Length: 372
Image (cartoon, rainbow, N blue to C red; front, side, top):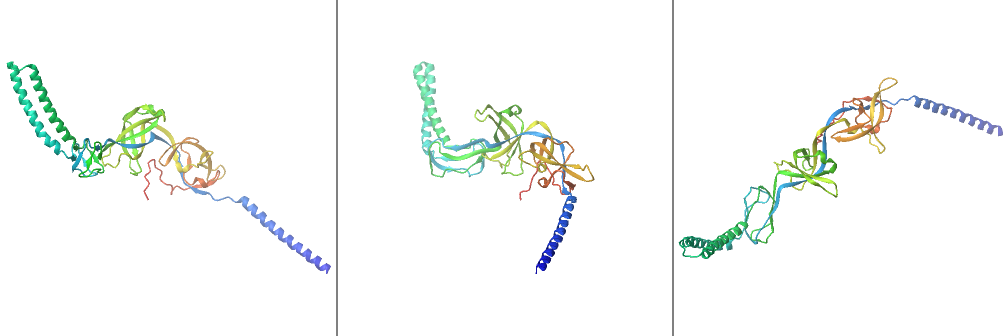
């Protein structure tokens, strides 16, 4: 029995040794194969670092205001007897908006006219009597005063009628009606808003250090999310002479055309003021940059030092302003170098690549993406 047990143990040891040797040889072969393995090159698209001349622009956020804008209100108390406008309609200067009850004034006017006429006749008679020396100068002065009082009374009544006949003070677009027929208006009660929409003002602010670059006549481009893809051209027409002491910003006003009346007072807009000085930059697609907290970098495509093909070199860069799909590089690259334009997050330094630009997206300074 003892010999059988010993033989079984010895046989088991031999089997384990053989299996271990085989496994060790397999692992060694896999390690050698892994050391010799070269990953296939990654297919990338590239873009060339280009020297471009960019327009220098000052950007800000602005608010649209009407060149002329008021809330038409009642000047005198009275009852509304006629509404002569449609809410939201365009109106010309002097068009009738509403008419208040003027029956009392119209009833008083004939009597005032008669008194004024009588005073004029008496004054003419007194002029002749004064020349003949029949009356004194004091009596003549009294006649003159009576005549002028009569004329003043007539003009007062006519002015009251005119104030109760409310007309548009300027041409523009009317708002929502705020009165009804038969309503008793008090002095100052609102009737309707009136806005002159073409042209329209854009009010915005810029930091005080940009003041030396500003002057009247500079081009101002206005964009808004209410009109996607549209840019409205205008000009700076006013610069506030006082800088805000709290924000150290200066208020600027531009005037833009608004023939279609798509821009309305109170809207939020983006403003870009174009400066005459152009900036020379090295531009690359913004998608070529690998953004990181420690530093931004790009992958430069170079010829391999050993063998054939292309390899990547990770290059840290300093970035400037953005313009559409492009970003300016202020340091780290040279004109003419080729950089990977897309998919940089999956690449590494020294990696072999194959360049294929057939699917390279079209990069533009003023992209107009479709609203899907």
